[in-house]
Image (cartoon, rainbow over all chains, first blue to last red; front, side, top):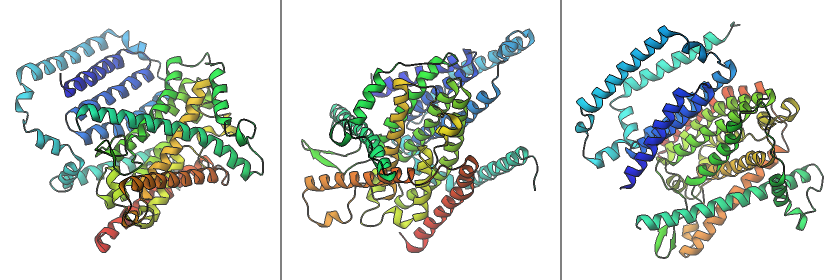
Length: 170
Length: 343
């Protein structure tokens, strides 16, 4: 068994179990913690795929920034209405319907469309593509327009948030 | 080197680094008390050992023997998890910081860093961003309003200062053209220290480091007069010691990181021109690194006993309206250095 396979099984198990635990916990804060563990597992999986930049960004952006805000909201709002939803039969049917569609989609992707066939067997090229130098070069040459557009979108969203949060301007 | 040899060398390096951090932290607490006593015209600890040198060990023993009290309102698993996260983050961050040049051991060239990875700086940023959880969860799980306030304050503070910290590092990365800490150190040979080339970035990083480690003048998460004790009000015994240890370990790691990024790392200026043998070169380099870190640690303690605590709105204003624009300005300055002076 190669080291890569061992790491894949380890991180895969962590992310699978933590995602199941995340949706089955009733305490929203515990769910959020399992989501963070899931992100950590995913970041390990990205490392086994030679995608170092994505692995670290996963931790910095999702686990380090976005989930902190989630925790803030959960701590301050104290949501205790999860039991309310489980008593609504209409919602339950709707949830089962959505889950069934997603399940069919996953089955189709794994068993019919064979995603691994299109993989590039050239390991050296895939190692190079995952490095920060290569991603930076691509972002600032081929994809500079979408990159700048995304930057302006985020700036607009920040200004919007400030305007919404501020009660009155002098 | 084959895989087994790499694993053995890495384990040995991990043991050495963890031992050094633990010893450094123990003596850091002692020196903090001694320096504070000196600043306030007192004597300080002087009973246990020679001039009180064993005081910290006595304190650790006392904390180990104390009763561990968990409040009824606390969420017990998370209450236990929080100090573990704090310690985990402190000890794993050090893995990528180099403390010396390559040395020859049994015919192998061994770099004096636990993990020489090409995403080293991002690894540090990722782990420090996880450090927020320890304090936030400690505050929340204690089931006390003072702890919760301390935890929330701290997360807001750490997120705010992480931004100017990240932008300050941006300037360093532009000059060294690498995210590998070893190459960042090598890019600062001679007197080409980043602290000299980009003083503004150095200052913003230094201030952010104070805020990230919750040291005075930014120790609002544990402001005693307002919050009784802050996020660790409801902690006792070894769990409290965990937070205490993590705080001092963070200080040590922040100093080591500042030395690596801005003060030339383990390099003694122009040492390679003196014609020393490899062994002496390595010894002097490691000692240089230790002296630089010790000087910064003294600075940390010195500031603590000189400057009073900021008010919360002052802290936020400084972070967002002063440090953040300054760190952006620093990036422009570095770009000018590169474009005009061809550094």
